[in-house]
Image 1: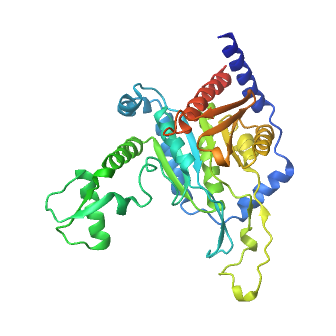
Image 2: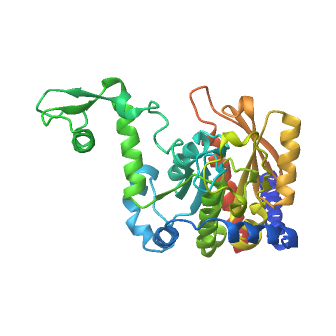
Image 3: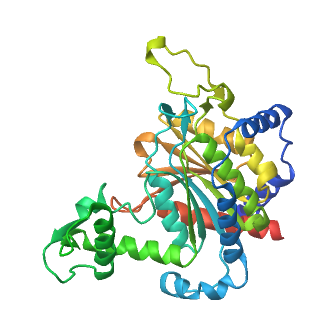
Length: 377
């Protein structure tokens, strides 16, 4: 018990030091950040995104959310209470090579880590802003086949609707509207996929209709960083109750918008010689300016364990992260290493059929609680 108290006091002290001893964002970084945002193309639907964020945060951080969420908490969590909010970023960003983009450089990421973690955050009582790459893995969909519409459903000539009734009706109208199928055809769920489909719909519907999951999509590095800034500045009012779980694979280099070709680059022009600029390191700005008291978790992925731990330690100190999740490529689904100022902890999945995200999120929730206690002390 004494050792646990000592560890907690060390963790609290480290969290306070990270906030009170943050170095000012250096002049060069500030210039780079300003240049990036000043030259970036205008974010489409910025006003709409800001409105959604404001409504979502107000709903989930207000006292009234305790009552509006009681049904969800009773069914899925077993208790009521105010909800913390976490921003989960997921998937990889693209770097356009032309303003009217045909070609781009991609940071590949399936988005599995972010989508799975979102489910466990929701189960832990958090509300989630899910900032994800279009077309990547989504919460509650990871147990479905790659092409769920074609692989989970089949057509039948029966006049009565079979399988999951509500789902069949919705899909029938959608398919009829887009593909013009005859009126007497119906979609049914394959028996082998019925439980997975029901589970996905049940979980997604509870989270979205309950107002606990806000999904925002991005594709390019410009979209990602502009939306992340909007989210962070909106979450600033949450103070220590906010969390950032930055699992997205963010591009390190980009082509500045003003120096980018407008139209498709022609191959007849010969070899392509292009100079890429370095994407400004936004983590320091996030910690210093956008959301200085939030609990921040970043990620590192490497193929070499020694290099991985060195970079994780460096990110922890340089950007004043509260925690860094270190992933070794070959074992990332079985084990991750959580690096904090208190030390390094290897987090293993319970068995071959379990998710490593389950114990990882549990541990981060505990550390977030300690962070909040420290900030409120």
